[in-house]
Length: 249
Image 1 (tube, rainbow, N blue to C red):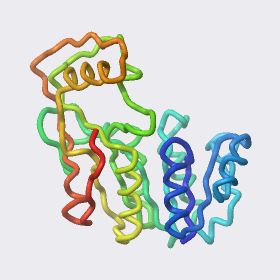
Image 2: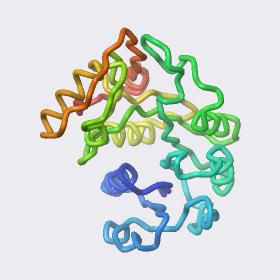
Image 3: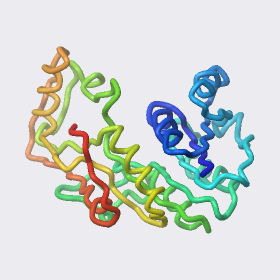
Image 4: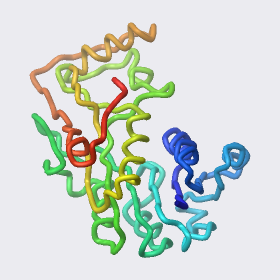
C-alpha cells in the first residue's frame, strides 16, 4: 500500500519505519524541510505540511491508499476545519486512520467504553465528527496518555502539584499504539471507533510517586481526594480485532 502519515514525529516516525518493514511505501509529513534528510535516510518520502503556510499536499494524493492523521489540536488554529481541508485532498477510496484522544470523554467516574459520554465541543471530537460525516472510510483510535521511547509523564510532573491522587491512570505504550494502527490496516477494520489503553489503572498519586523514585526525580506533591475519575476500557479492539496489548505502563 501507499500510506501517507501526517505528523512524522515521536509516534509517526517509528510507525513509518515499522510500516516500511511490512512492505508498504510511506510518505511522511514534517513542518520543516530540515527534517527531510532524516526521513529520506529511512526511505520515507518527505513532504511539507503544517496546515497553515503549507496547506496543500504535494505528494500524488490520488495514489494514496491509506491516510494516517497524527497531529494534535495544539498544532492548529482551527482543528476540525483543518481536518476537513486535509481529507478533501485525498481520493474518496482512501482509507483514514485518525489518532484521537480519550480526553474527548467527560470527566466522570467509573469505567468508560467507546459509548461513554463525550465533550461535544471538544476540538478532537469535532474532528471525529468531520470524519464520520465524510464519504471516506475512517477508523478512529482514541489514545490514552502516551508513554515510551524516553517519554514519561513524570518527567513533566516532577516536583509539581498533583491533585486527586486517587484518580485512575489511563496510559498506553507507544509500541502498542503502533501495533493497533497496523492491526486496523491488516484487518481492514474501517468505520470503527476504538479506545487504545492499557488495561491496568493504578492510582495517579501512587503511580507518579513510584515513577519519580524509579527515574531518580524529585517526587510530585500529591493531594489525595475521594474522586477516582474514569478508567478507559480498551478491550473492544481486543474482542473485535484480536489485538493484544504487550507493553506494560
